[in-house]
Length: 395
Image 1 (tube, rainbow, N blue to C red):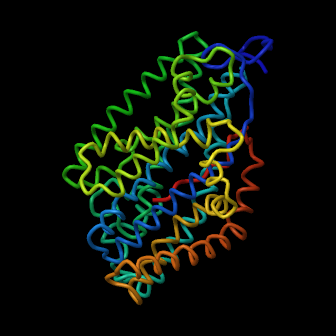
Image 2 (image 1 turned 180 degrees about the vertical axis):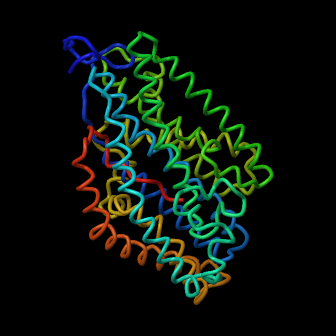
Image 3 (image 1 turned 60 degrees about the horizontal axis):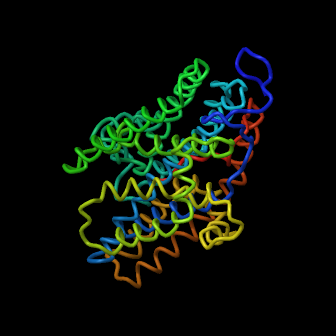
């Protein structure tokens, strides 16, 4: 391990100045992805099934799975950059990083979008002519649908979150380069943390402003930048906690870790069962800040949270989460058109079970025959140490 332009140090230094290990993995994060994906499926089944009353309120709050995916993506993808600069190694190359992201996302997305368009008369209420809502088709294929009201959630609606993720992928390596340049010039890591904190405050204010009027702007990259910033902060903290002299923020996170699962359970209970939540934005930020802690920061060998996150079936859904994201809403829409609408509580449970089973079966085939071969090929191109295989988040 070397410092930039210098001699090999006796030990790697973390953001706070202490030695740091390298190359850890966080398999429980797949469980976090799985639970977020299942919550989004539950939301769309309820939405399409026109559920009413408490069941409808319950379903609407399950959109919380979206920011959870953003935080996980930021943590997983930024941590290698932080670890490399802490070790004094060159940062992962931008070209291979972007290539791996493109190979992971584009092929399956383009195939799915085309298949959904071709089958739209059967699996939606629109014709092929209506499918793109009067907007040029390339806006969807090139991830620019979220920048106009007409196309924001049209066609393959949940793909709006991929538009946001793609913007993050493009910005992240350049942020990492700038942060590493400052670190090499002895600028404290606190400056980066303050900048990320300002992004959280500014983006959250922007989101809340337009959420109040139901604007499509809540689905733009800037409106969701705060969630990615939280994940990046946690990536810095994760690397710093492996040093011998962690900074104050890292020590504070380590203190909170044992209570994180309880805090998450309380916040989720409030979201799901309280009809009106006045502090919705604040609680949402608290949830996404806590959600990684049991999976990535709790090093106790056995906890209830880890038992849940490490269950084989939960892990499997996490691995398949990209396919689950792309397929689940069209499957739910097809079932709604032909079987359930509107739904009572019994119909909802049956429909949710059917959508999960069908989605996982289709996603398994997609992962085995398309995604995994491409991942393996792309992984041979300048692959850095990573916390866990990075996947785009469902919506």
